[in-house]
Length: 223
Image 1 (cartoon, rainbow, N blue to C red):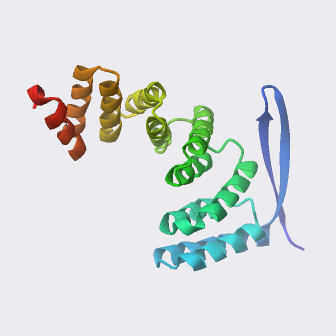
Image 2 (image 1 turned 180 degrees about the vertical axis):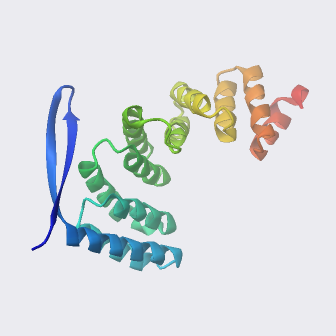
Image 3 (image 1 turned 60 degrees about the vertical axis):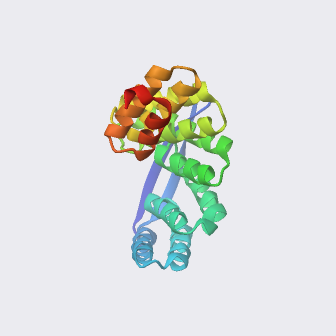
């Protein structure tokens, strides 16, 4: 007789409505899924990306509640952008299972950003940010939620929104050279030239070569 494990996940719908989803996972299926995911990891390490995707797809078909399988699908995408649509499909599936999972929402945002679908990316980053407020902002990727959403706002010329995100990124990590560079650019566009140069100087000191170019071009008295 096979042993069964019951996994529960509760989440809020709208403001005050809640319900629970119940997943029944066969223990043998879980073990097979773990083994398949480990095989996929080895495939990724050996640059066998097509094999990795096939194995992960099989793993998810056996046990759709094993979170690492989805995370490694994102790594497959990073190795081969041709898997964009398929990985988006599975990450959306993961969002329906792993409720309020900021990391999964962030990876969706990353794919949309790299596909230049900036508004979709902003939406997913915003979900990630909301979830991180509940899950904890000590997770290392959280700084990137704000930075990359800010970058999308910047590309859309929504400078005020971009500036807010860069400010928060720097609050979380005052020594982020890219956030300092980009915040300086926003400040420069708003006419705050001295503040922009200060940010670029800090960014340069932290090793950002682009900041050095901006300083030489726009802040000659501060070289």
